[in-house]
Amino acid sequence: MNRPWLRAQVRGRAAEIIGPDYPNLTYIECVLDGLEADDITDVRQISTDELDQRITEQSLPPAIEDEEDAA
Image (cartoon, rainbow, N blue to C red; front, top):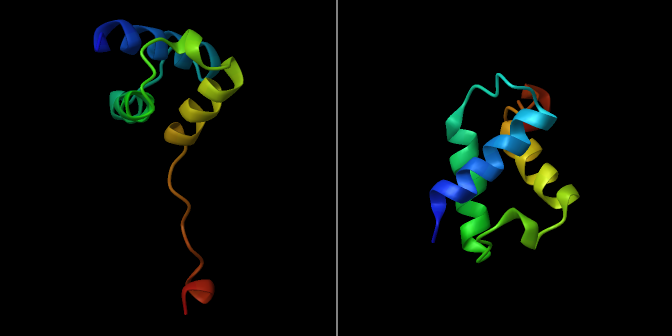
């Protein structure tokens, strides 16, 4: 698998939709892991909307549960 090429593609798209200061490479690695798990070796194998969704989902902080809801 050509992970450096895929990483460059994901990083480039993340910079476009989130901003050039996309700070956390951990999120990019999570997106890469998901793509590789689905045997995707090039972002052109999926729609732009799907890639954007994967990037956005990984870049958002986890939801904090309301203490009332957890009880």
